[in-house]
Image 1 (cartoon, one colour):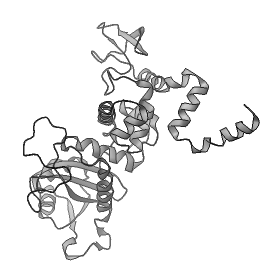
Image 2 (tube, helix red, strand yellow):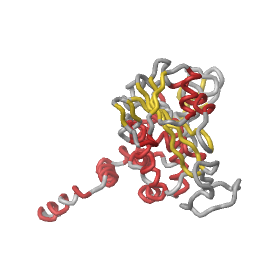
Image 3 (cartoon, one colour):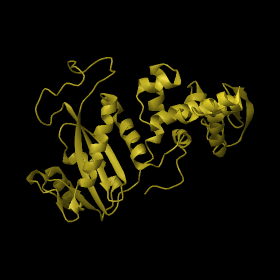
Image 4 (cartoon, helix red, strand yellow):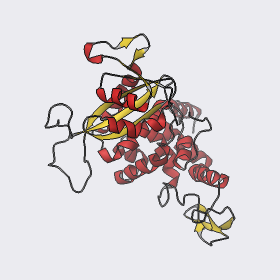
Length: 322
């Protein structure tokens, strides 16, 4: 290649996407970099090697299969590899997993991710929920200080179900009943002033005191100050739970009274709603996965594909959430 052609060639590097840069690096380095995901999986497995059947850590190497080191447990004789007993067990195309983790961090749709990686859309959909099954559990254990709680409602969706429990409706249409009804799913969000967030799919219809008792007590301190709107269920729950409570009369147009407000949790609702629109309807049975996915992006604890792949196997960042 002539010097002038080389300059023209390298000038195009700035326009490459992240995946194109990785593919170029892999081409220059050879097949070694294509096994980056496999090497990462093996490194996570070696740190906590144990038999999924009897939990013994006494095992020895037992050949290779499907690109992974296999082990045989000495006490029980079972064989296993780095993925046995994890959400990624029995999945193929391991060399694409880091690229797919990047697609998740970019909130790529199923079809867009499938197109970028060259896999079927069903594969991309299966990977989405396998990757999120453990990663979504990296949540704060408890909320402290002043916490805000509020609920939002999304239309129930049986998208992808083989047998509907109600008459079908066109995607994007509205509920048949006005106001809050059993056609809508309640999502309860509690968020303290440090940004730690817990969310719950409370059930269909309007929020009730019983749902608050089922969701909030395990994740809030006894000395917490709970900020909510004027919904009667919060007042009844706080009285029975013995926690401090202050309501803001949002319906009267009073949104902020000094430190008393629910602006923090409402801002989270706004970001969540805007983000869910990307997917043009989310099946209600998968809502917990999407709430966990949104928390991954909003909290910023998982920022790289490598960290997300480790979290998929249950190894979370060292920073401890409260």
